[in-house]
Amino acid sequence: MSQGTRAGGSRMSAAHVMASAVVFAIPVLELAWTLGGGDSARDALLAMGPANWVDVVIGMFFAEPVLAVVLAAVLSHLSYAYRAAHGGAARHRGRALAETAARAAILPGALGVVVGAFNGLWWGVAAGALGWLLRLGVVAEYRTGGRSTETGQRTGRPAVAFRSRAAEAARIAALLLALVVLPVLSVVAALDGRSWTSVLLCDVNTGSGPQRARVVELDRQAPGVVGWDVPAHEVVSGTDCAVDPDDVLRDPWWRSWTSGSGVGQWSWS
Image 1 (cartoon, rainbow, N blue to C red):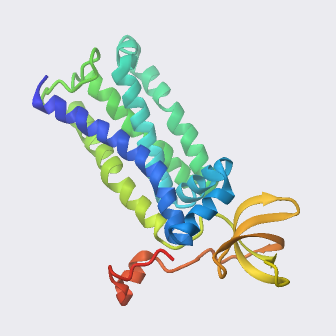
Image 2 (cartoon, one colour):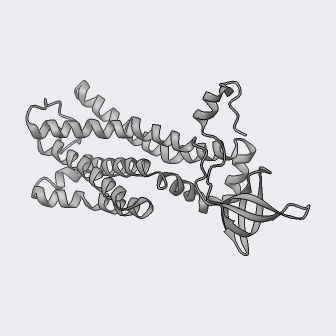
């Protein structure tokens, strides 16, 4: 196996790991920055429960249109590249190009519908089209001999014709999206100080009588909600809630940084 082939496989493995790490770790960063780290993030997570953990992922990745498009495209590419490298390309070798291209459009189309439902038609179209183009790049890699249908590894064949150059460009674009663009956009979204879910104005009673408080919804339980009391920094039960249109809970990290708080005073609370 050549050094270039090993490097190509290593970069693709890194892309898989990066995408998984972003989906798993970035919501934790969102909780820690928005509500406060340590006890605050832990209390909020326990109040949410595992069943509602996916709400953080949905709230973050599908309320930010550009991030949603990039994530959908990366998932489309990685899932197709994985299946192609593990026998999919060999099974499709005898199929017509039009049929292969049509099959490659199924998952990007589905993800485009999801992104469009949260963010609007054209964001959904962008997510589906970008994911499909990256998948076609994988198809072109195998069809032009850039990858072996038997092993899924890069063959090291130089890209000289138009199709092989286009396939190489799509491969590089996919790696940049997975290894650079996706993590950067995710960190920015996690540290922007906005809530991933509804912010409500509710009646809260913590033992000193009912009072109106600003609450981040963590779970719905009749007759009200379980939420995070923003001023009091604690989990509370709220009733008679109304939606607060302002979803900003604290300043973004970069504004805290530029305002002079510095590294030594960067606080999670």
